[in-house]
Image (cartoon, rainbow, N blue to C red; front, top):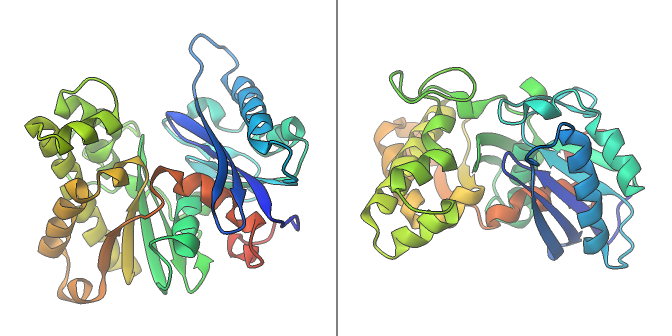
Length: 309
């Protein structure tokens, strides 16, 4: 993949919503659309999603000369980064030839990446990870994933990413998780759980707004999610030894309502070395980190961070 210019399409396929954006060289979004990832009543979910992404991309391009698209998808991808191979929240996308289907629909080359890697790269280059040498980014939304950059390079283990860090078990007697286990970090911080605990109408943003207005159940739900994130961060710090950990994704928009509890839990449960070494922050790009990170390798000369095309 050598197409690097002033603009690129960024596409972030999440468990609930998909974002399509025209992204500029400095990571600035010129145009953005959000569409539902799933289509009710459709028997051909993947082809239908590709069609709707192409329609949104056409509106976002607005005549700009973008020549390639970066696509971030929730879940593991195969070694050639041609398709998604696993995600319990999007089973109908598994083994679908996503890269080639989108390339045909968009009429341009496509680079496929894991969404947690994309969010991590965006924050490392343009946001809260700038200047870090060992940067861990945890992305919480419909699910929970993580990516890490060490000295400018993304770490790739299982599924072309860190693996399923969202399925580290934090509570053996905790709620059932979509993966089939119980008490996973993802099950404790998923936006569906937060909304249920808060007792608010609407989605995660409504819970965050209610908490800011003093709604006690909303505040409690976000604080609980923050504690779970902090406990997960303390566990992962023992393995990866980061110097900075950022919380990204939709949950990061809660700011201190989540971060304060996360920091308390981290300090309580981490080792002496981690407490001295690790800085916990909220990602600065919010919900757009994935879509910016998807496009980032097409906009910068050090696109090799994502490995060979």
